[in-house]
Length: 190
Image (tube, rainbow, N blue to C red):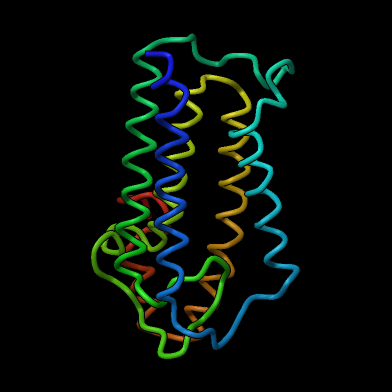
């Protein structure tokens, strides 16, 4: 049973990462890209969050203190959130198709995606990943998991602001209407 606890959540992330890498080959050519400084400002917090979640470097620090007690229920609830979040992100990625990019870009022949999970939130990939990181934090039960979640949130909020500018410039009133109808990250929250 201990083996499941050690490999299930990292295994879910690994499966997601392999899919993400393979799916990247289907992206359209880039027409416009965010600046290097902008990219760095969201990549650095994401990398710090990943380090907090995935390395044992913090095992003997205050960040390893628990905000939740060790429990099987906590682990399985967290693992379920990781799976649901990653599946939501993958579904969004499928709907986004060739418009996807790891950084903020506009693609050649970029289209405004409003189907699938984009009916519920404008940035469902970030929503799914935040849910997965929350699940990881719950399963871990340590403060470093919550700190990683905060870092992911800061990074994604920055990316959202840059993406929103790009999309407003590209799609004008269509995007204004979409913003009025659909929440950015949390469904039903305008």
